[in-house]
Amino acid sequence: MGVIINQSAKNLVTTYLGFGIGAINTLFLYTNFLTPEYYGLVGFLLSAANLIWPLMAFGVHNTLVKFYSSYDSQEQKDKLLSVILFLPLGISAILGIIGFFAYGFFLDYFSQSNELIKPYIWMIFLIAVATAYFEIFFSWSKINYQSVFGNFMKEVFHRACVSILLICVYFEVLTVEGFVYALSGVFVLRTIAMKLYAFRLYFPKITLSFPHNKSFILKYSALILIAGSVAMVLLDLDKVMIERFLPIEMVAVYGIAVYISSVIAVPSRAMHQITYPMTATLLNKRDKKGLLDLYEKSSLNLLIISGLIFLLIVTNIRQLYELIPDEYQISFSIVIIISSVKLYDNLLGNNNSILFNSDYYRIVLGIGVLLAILAFVLNIVFIPAYGIFGAAMATFLAFAVYNTSKLVIVYRKFRIQPFTIQTLYGIILILVCSFSFYYWDFQINPVVNILLKSILIGLIYVGVIYYLKLSKDINQLIEKVLRLK
Image: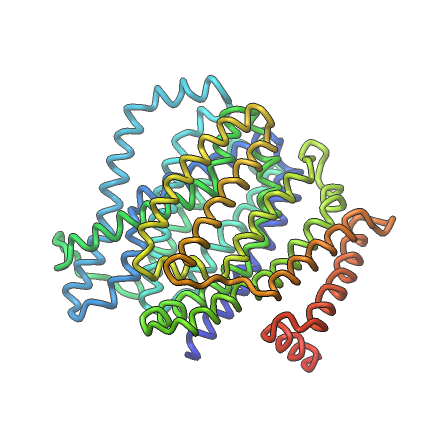
């Protein structure tokens, strides 16, 4: 348990550090050191790579974690590791051959939208392959109970490298075009470092045969492939579709809004590492009462914590954009819409853990595929008509339907739902504070305004939460912090 707590704490620190560096890159370095067109190009390349790397990985990074410990003999484990190494390589080779023969088609496609992208199309494939194998080697370290280095490489390393490269652009050590090429090199370097670390933990005896339950492994990998693809489509499809219908600099403008809103998801990512194994244990024991208790607590606690982050974003959004160059300005309603999507995600609590540890994950995958198609259609309809506001609305509607569907499935199959009267009070508090502080500001420097306003909102919000005793866990945390002070 000590090892788990120690690594979880370190992972949480590196996750927040990575988000902090990413915020500096997104809001200040990219916006001041690159033109909007090249910033949009970078955002498009990364989003397109995120859409296809799950295909190349074929879900084997999750398969490795699920099945490795189930084998008793080292021979079977080595066979699994060999499959994990070579199966994505074969799939990547097939996709690479298809891409080679379709390269002319891609050039013609992008010549109709954005000429700037054409020289860099091949980088999408390179970044996707590197990301797929990084995730595989990260899982390799997880099965050896070593996740700190991998989490650092995933959250901090590439963002820190981007900061250094952008500074090199500013001092004219590197051209803008050189920066784009060097960016793909960062992802390759990250994968090589992760591979060396994974092999240092354990290097298998390479074999070309499958372990004994080959069909089950392939079936599970295919299902995870679908799940990963659906998740990436819902997260990055909008930015890829924006490139098709709008000038490429709009990808950068929209990407800033998405990154600001993504901070709301950090508490959920941290809590998921704890609730996922707990949920699996409760399901295996058929402890419905314990499952309901965890469902309600995770939903309420995430609502309260992410609600504060939502408040700080929404009420400070005008001052934050005063710090960003004029060419990246955006309708604040877009940030609010995307932030609402992230807040709804947190409101689900451990819903995903319940579904993907149960026998009903196939239903969720089916719904996810339909929702990915719906998101594609909505983007096609809304972006030409409403621009990047249409992309935000398409994302909001797709996630609203997807999240509501998952709530309904858990209720229908388990007869439990996460909402209590405290949930209602929490939502009302968030709404009241949002409307109360959105239009009110200190008439001073934007940075000082953000700091003072955030402190005031934080004190009022936390004070009301504590006074109303909405969450026993949150109250205990507040009391612990006050005692430490």
